[in-house]
Length: 131
Image (cartoon, rainbow, N blue to C red; front, side, top):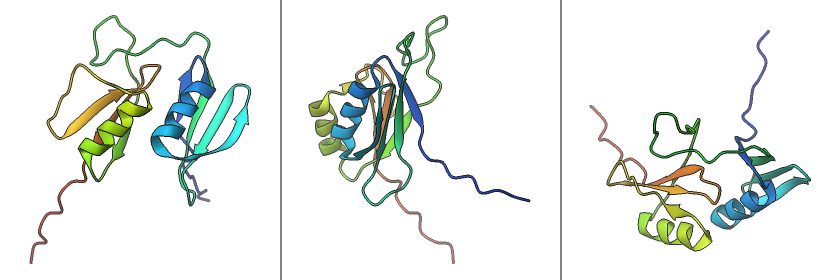
């Protein structure tokens, strides 16, 4: 028997999940659907995969880009945007910090208030169909 698996939400660790959730709520405009002392969950309007935050008292900020011997990132978030410049301005206004290292011209890497990296990028151009 095959069982259905649905990704409910990636979970980000933070020393204060409520503060980090508030940042992402400002960034994304999503709604808090679960709010507990050590856990917060956001969902986009209309449903879909959300984003959760949990307390991690010994959280260490990851290093971007990776440096041997330093705390490594294990995952990051990618956000497709329709206007990269406007999205960057919005991210900075909500408290994100532009990372010092930028690997590509068409992607902007930002750090959230506790150092989780996330990327803003434009959709890939559609390739012409082959006839």
